[in-house]
Length: 255
Image (tube, rainbow, N blue to C red; front, top):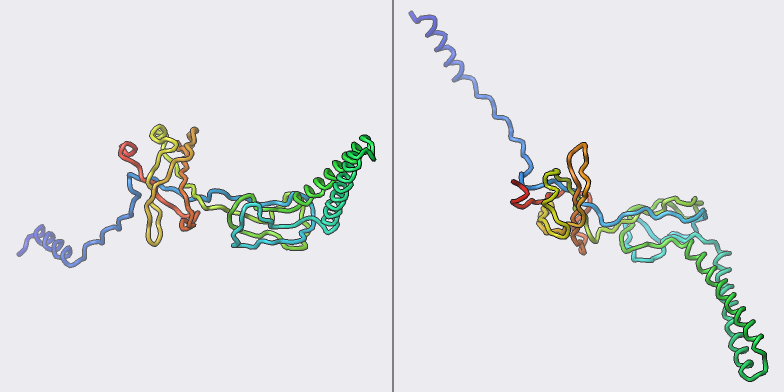
């Protein structure tokens, strides 16, 4: 007869052999200790807004278009204002012709010096009127401030817009900011102008060097972190803003 203790031990071993071992918990990948998470930010981004209340006479840009510096994107002046500018140009042409004629006659002593001064004044006034008319057209011509892309078009031709209403969203990512946050203990380990290696995911992933453009001197009291921005050229526009990357730290920064 099998003693009770031996029987219980034998039964436990038998059950253990029949029951499968519990599956091992999956390992959650952790970020490398020698790197920091970063985000890619476009070099410039802005909302191009109407400088005045006006009717949108013409829009020349659309979403996805590439624009050059000073390229007109929207016309907000009226046909009357355009005619006034053309009229001012014609008045100036006549004033310059009259001045040349007066100068010739004054040199021949046919007209007095006083008449010459008067004609020069008329020419100067005509020039000012043309400058004013041209400035009015420029003020109501919305142009791209730099080369970039139209991200969004926010209005349509014929629409009455108020001053300050955004008409386009522009973005320039010919250069890319790589922004990350680091612990306060690392504040003295970064130097403006020095470079760090950055890993950017993709197909294929790429590793490049980027220069430190800005080191925030203020540490956030809540998180104990400070901000760093790197800058890298992106002439072929292959690096896309908004994706995450990793900044690789050197040996002195990982101690």
